[in-house]
Image 1 (cartoon, rainbow, N blue to C red):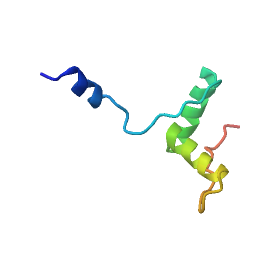
Image 2: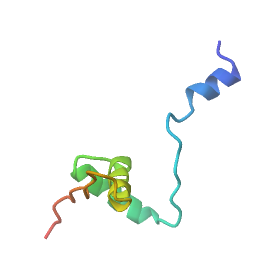
Image 3: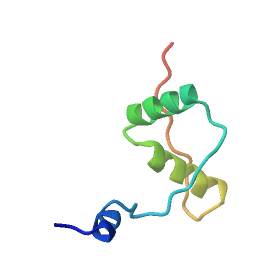
Length: 69
């Protein structure tokens, strides 16, 4: 049987969470769909954008998925 502390430790995030406020649910859904279309996910795309914006060496903007006509 596991203790309460062991259960909490099992469910902790491995990485510190960063929160973005003021993003509506429709935009989140569109972003997730676009990220999946590009073969990535929300965290991967966001990380690439932050690295590019901060001017990290070698950072490039992520490729956008093809837009429907």
